[in-house]
Image (cartoon, rainbow, N blue to C red; front, side, top):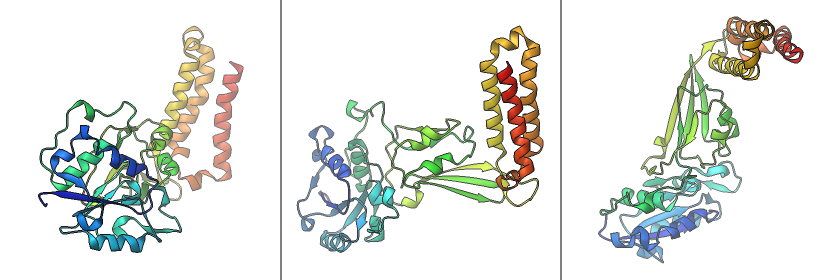
Length: 319
């Protein structure tokens, strides 16, 4: 990299959230100016291009012109989630694409938006700037900071609820043979926390890790793999028995919490409530729980499930 790093910022369709963080990172307390890094007012004066926002069809030709004006080595940083992976606008009618679909990109710095800490760490790490040090008080992230999504593979039950609520479609689900893989794309994640909030097993957390800069956005993902088995009836679709087990355990915990005293004072009455639950658990473990969603939706199976659940509700009501 050149002795002096001169960065030109180009906004190709951002909400200005990323631009504000870029300006915040120029605060003297972060010491960027002391590391021989400066901001260029014109593209002809810069040797690094930092792009914020996805590229709209209107800004596409302008970005190409700006890129050609940047001096060698002409490095490009895609800054923020829109520039890296298009964010929630991935299917917008007016989008030309992410930055790397229009011009070559050397480094990706995800975030919605990246904090000044992530900006300084990402830019200096990507460009090989020497003298940058973390560890001071200003580098301590706030308590409510939402960084990289982390998933506890053992706690995850593979229900896929996180994928359903993810605004930028950053969580893919693939079922193959006897495995199901949940892929969390950090290049698309906007750190909204919806996946964490919806997760029934509390397997998802928002870490304080902001160090996500990379030269290949296809490497910005984490995989969780869950075992599956074929449907006991049709033998075609895959069944995730861990979801059934989790649901049964939740029902059992509910009953124990609600009737804890009854278990001690009146075992006979508790037995009347516990028996329908035991019947439901046995049925799920030996029949219904081994079927795929399609086979479970047959009329006789639905009737059986309803009757088992009704038995529990009636005993609870009578208690």
